Image (cartoon, rainbow, N blue to C red):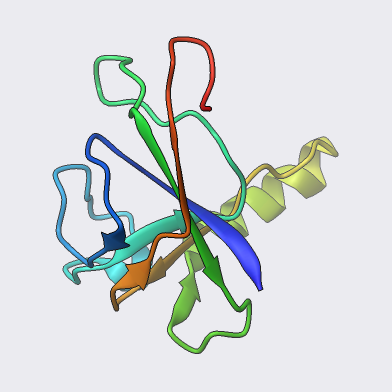
Length: 114
């Protein structure tokens, strides 16, 4: 099992696949599908105006969950960058097309999630 992270303006106990306002055509296999986006690392996610999403949701999933799909295009892009610059790759993005239970929620204070 691994903790994955999801950020939003609202607090949830369960994340439901949807087509949110940040969705775009560069999402590979998830284009046009309602999904939940998950990161394998904590981060700061902001809206278009630089405001931090106040809720960091934690989801515990098996890394071999057949419904958990990696964003292949982003992953390939980051792998090439890592090879060319020898810098750490950062996060990996995943999506899942079914509801997932939230195991913990942290709230943004103005400096960090607590």
